[in-house]
Amino acid sequence: MTSPEDSSDHSDNLSEEDLIRAFDSMFLSMMRFTKKQILEESIHQSVITPPQFGLLCCLVHTGSQTMKELSERMDLTHGASTGLVDRLHKLGLVSRDRSSEDRRVVHVEITPEGQQLIQRIDQRRHAILRKIVSHLTPEERRLMLKIDSIVKEKLMNHVE
Image 1 (tube, one colour):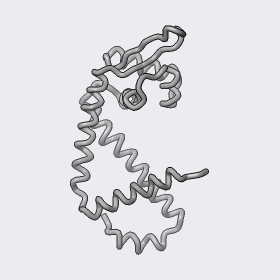
Image 2: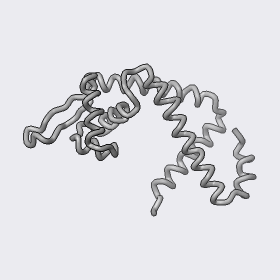
Image 3: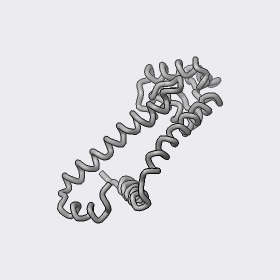
Image 4: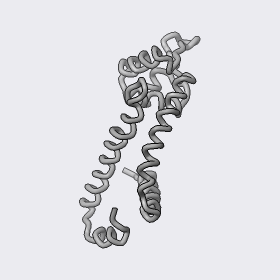
């Protein structure tokens, strides 16, 4: 990794388009790495697929959801989310309960077994990230935290 001093020399000459391309490339690389190395490697040893992992994570963070809420939150068709929930239910990782007020409404909740699976996957994911971070110098770590802070702030303040 280049030092901040090296980067600043080049950044003065970068156009906005160059910066956009660099940011986009970094973002896409991080997404690919996260999917390929972290999620797939962590999930590989478990019984679920990446989409099923996403659904379980959604339930961990939001709690019980109706099928409609889950479909909207995950940006899936009702049929796709039903298929995911059916498979997770067969594995004992989610429970489904029909609403007593409206039988058409189905509530989905992660089971303790599902929560344990997510915890095991997260532990493997953190071990991979820890290995990567261990190779960063103290200066690179500070720089990474600074960039993270700046990007988050800019994203939070983004107005279209």
